[in-house]
Amino acid sequence: MTDPVLDCRGVIRRFNEGASMLEVLHGIDLKVQAAERVAIIGASGSGKTTLLQIMGGLDEPDEGEVFVAGKPMHGTDESTKGDLRNRNIGFIYQFHHLLAEFTAEENVAMPLMIRREPKAAAIEQARELLGQVGLGERLHHKPGELSGGERQRAAVARALITRPRLVLADEPTGNLDAGNGGHVLQLMLELNQELKTSLVIVTHDHSIASQMDRILVLEEGTLKTKEL
Ligand SMILES: Nc1ncnc2c1ncn2[C@@H]1O[C@H](COP(=O)(O)OP(=O)(O)OP(=O)(O)O)[C@@H](O)[C@H]1O
Ligand SMILES: [Mg+2]
Image 1 (cartoon, helix red, strand yellow):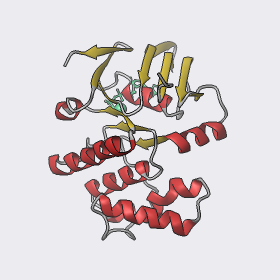
Image 2 (spheres, rainbow, N blue to C red):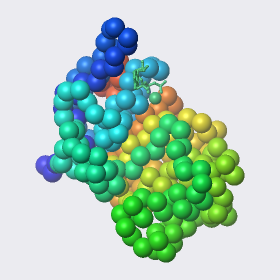
Image 3 (spheres, rainbow, N blue to C red):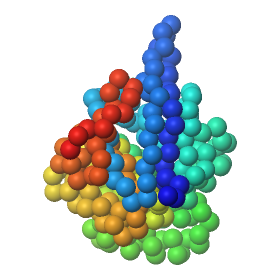
Image 4 (cartoon, protein in one colour):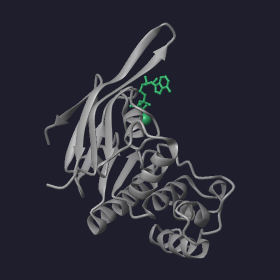
């Protein structure tokens, strides 16, 4: 078997809470294979965002290891992490995190420009993808001039533009109505089919979770498989 796209081994994360210590993740083991789709569910405050950020190298585990495409994400410097992330991961955050001063097409083109692809080619690809998410008429709008659903679709386009091997999505449809939420999920599933992209989706939405290959519950700092 080939390397898993994502391999978390014994991941522990603790936060200082004044004098006491809060251990949010008690030792998470998770392997995600190419094209596999995994839902993570769990109560508010159970550590889902924390885990996703560690997977994506936006936070460091206190103990344990995280490998993305076979390469260590933990314990490396910011530029190595940034490079590994840019080459392999698309991140869809709980809140859209688009850059306010840039247009939709510039926001979506950004991951390609970070890779030093020429701006004209990056913008061209961004326009095409924005068309696919139904924003072909909103290319020059800034995030403040887009609706909530439009912003989230732009954020999805930004996450997918590099055709990543792994998409990490934190409540990608949490702030959307059923129609827009379904549309965003559809886009992610199409990419999963087309490019064999692996998906790890944190969601409270049972209808989304049930469309994944596996549902994991984060509870008391550990991941348990939920029987389908
Ligand atoms: N930087 C931090 N410093 C201290 N405590 C933190 C920090 N980040 C998260 N926590 C704590 O860790 C716990 C898990 O937070 P996290 O954001 O991962 O939860 P979540 O499962 O994503 O919740 P939600 O469903 O509400 O988004 C919470 O109790 C939170 O207060
Ligand atoms: Mg969260």
